[in-house]
Length: 258
Image (cartoon, rainbow, N blue to C red; front, side, top):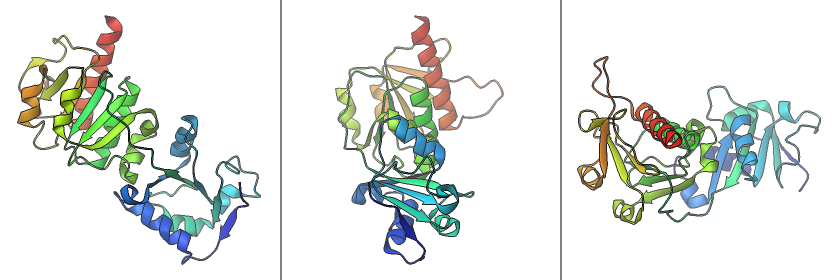
């Protein structure tokens, strides 16, 4: 661990690099680095044994150097609160951020409870689905091509730390799903049995589709089961993240009851 570096210039090269990292949704793929901000996300990483390459603290949190965040990382930058705000992408900036090394690419685990994202494009939806997956015991998320970048700052914020407990694969070709040893289950607004009446397999791989187009016909054709969520209130469809929470909870509850 080196002594903290106090930065006072807005034009400091390290500060410029942090701004770029925090604001670029896919920059992590080239840099191999990801930015997480806020005490919750930083704590979630530490709880999962993920150690930051760099800690960035606002002066108000650093205080006299006795902050509990002191010594967390091998390198620490301390910024004025105004400079920290200049790199933050939050409406209400936090006072702590980590630069983490992007985890190495995982291989597909064929036998575990899985969520497959088929071109889900909204970062908030993707992060929320990851959060539900982690909460309900799904160990793996496979993001097919054209799905929002899993490690983007927006998805990380919406995931609330779920990333650090999941096996994540992105940019996957749909043909790779043929190696899964668990059945595919898909949802539809109007087709299939009501989810509460269906006998849901567990473990399985829930396929969640594009916000407007749903699951692709090719994946529907591969599915072992198709279910729908009843909507007695008369709405045409549910937000994909809301549908995911219902499906994954129902699946997990059924597994515990059996």
